[in-house]
Image 1 (spheres, rainbow, N blue to C red):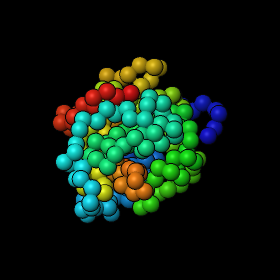
Image 2: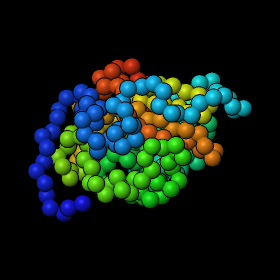
Image 3: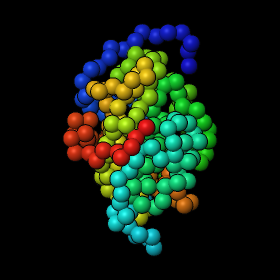
Length: 227
């Protein structure tokens, strides 16, 4: 990552599907291309399925807080969320939100090696997060200036469970950008995350663009807390 300043990209000021639209044309944005070999269309994506002996996630759904694991945005938070989440739909949503909060920030998140080793599912299409961050990706999709600090918050966020089984849950996570310590009322993100239940925890499989921010925030369930 170069220490020299680069020309800032223009800030977008409307809550459109920016994170999703940009993602479909830029391989590094919000890692949608990183984990999804398709262009974000839903369907058969190799996610695990099938019934097990545990209760169905749909039968034990509860409103997710969006802050399981704590307010930090480091590897310890992701690990704490995985440890605390049970095999329910809401538990899967919490881990998905934790991963989104950890991954999408600048400066880049701490503990990349730890997350790579302990938080990715065996079937994740791409497992080398260290190599990914070495490419110096612009994860904001141009919503903030290049090299401008930012992070994502679930405080005003929402979510929609797209599909759920005992072994896999796919959730669209809606967040707001935080820049200069302030939550933006207009700059929003929409990321659809799949997690799989393995080794007694929810592990990250992939993320992709499936909903615009307008659609997601219009129909999504607000997180009960957020951070």
